[in-house]
Every structure is written in C-alpha cells, then in structure tokens.
Length: 295
Image 1 (cartoon, rainbow, N blue to C red):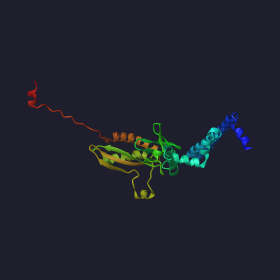
Image 2 (image 1 turned 180 degrees about the vertical axis):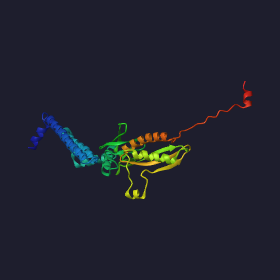
Image 3 (image 1 turned 120 degrees about the vertical axis):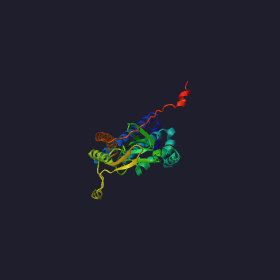
Image 4 (image 1 turned 135 degrees about the vertical axis):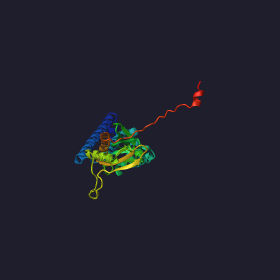
C-alpha cells in the first residue's frame, strides 16, 4: 500500500497538484489565523482604551511565520529530489542544528531581542519613546526582526530588535502617563518678579490640559498648585520656571506651545519685559598722530 501511495505521489502528473494544494491550504490557514487574531486585538482594544496589544501582535507574527514555514517545508518534502533536505528541516535534530547555526547571526539575535521586548516590556505598541538623542516617536509595531517607530513627521524609523534592546530608551508612557512640563521664562532685572509669577500661574491654571497632582496631605499643608521658582540670575535676565502637570506627553507639548504664547501676550500687556541681547557699538575718533600720517 505504501509503495502504491509513493508511486501516486511521485508521479509527475499529480505532484504539481499536490504541491499546489499544500501551498493554497497554507495560505488559507495563514489568512484565517490572521483574521482571528485581528478580531482578538480589536476586542482587546474595545474592552479598555489603551489596552496593551503587544503580546497579541507579536504572537500573530510568530504564528504566521510558523504556518508558512511548515507549509513550505511540506511542499518541499513532496519533491523526491529535495525530500532529504525537507526531512532534516522537519526533524527535531534538524531544527536544533538550524538554531545553533543561526545563533551567531543577526537574524536570531533580532528574534531573541523581540522576545525579550515582549516579555519584559521596556516599551509596548502605542508608547512614546526616545532612542539615543535624535530618534523619537510612537511605537507602531514590534515583529520578529525589528521595531517600527512613527516619528512626529509621520516617518517610520526601523530599528532591529538586537540594536534597540541594547540601547537606553526613554519611555514617556512607562507605568505612568502623566508629564511634568517645565515652563521657563526670562524677565528683565527691572521687571516685577511677583507679578510675572502671578501671570504665569494664572495662565497655567486657565489651560484646559492642566491637572492638579497634589495629594490630600500636600493640599492641607498649603503646597502651591503651580510651583514657580527663580532658577537662575543670568547675564541679562531673571529666569523663572513653573512646574505644570498634564495627563499625556501629547498634551504636554500642546500646553507648552499655548502657554509660551499666552504668557508672552500677558507680559506685554502688563509691562513685563522679556530681555533680548543688546550690542553696544563705540565709534572712536582717530588720534592726532594718526591724522598726520594720512596722505
């Protein structure tokens, strides 16, 4: 019976059909699996806004790769000339040998780096992160090879997992989304510091994104809702800093821009001067000896 089945499979007429069926089945299984996991991701997002879907997305990538790898391996196994190679791929010893072979290569390093990112979660999909000093944006995807970051110009930054897992990452959404936004303003030495502080405080409290993060104990103790301090006596300015809190990094950026404009307008209206560099030019008359030397 096995000989007849082998002759049936090895026949040149039935072999292309069998391989085609295997590949089509692989594609169908991969598509159905993708749709099922996508439904799970959507339901996870609907249950709670901002739900972490990093694990599901990474699981989807891994399962799809496994499905296609298995289907292609079976298709290769059906070809008699390549059956020996396919058997080694499907065998446990063969998989172990492949893993050892890839261990010193960047491909496996990226996969291991991706697994560590998903397991330990230094960041997840949707987090606002900064890598090094010039790479920042929102994490859009984490797959087996790399992490995709969408920067604030809507460009995609592709960083291999093995690289980013060894970098220092600043995560603005890790554990707590709240941000303390510094509002720094410089006023002239002739300006009224108390009035400038009052203007800054009024504008910050009037902004819709501002939140009060004081505890009940701090409120009872009379701590300032918006602390404002003189942080530097500069060459030409008294530098003030206000500590203001918002719920998200996005709100912090918008509030910072709004307050710079509104405080500047209030300073102009109330007579608070924001100093700017001055340069004094001195014109010297030529000395009498110099005039005599001229022809």
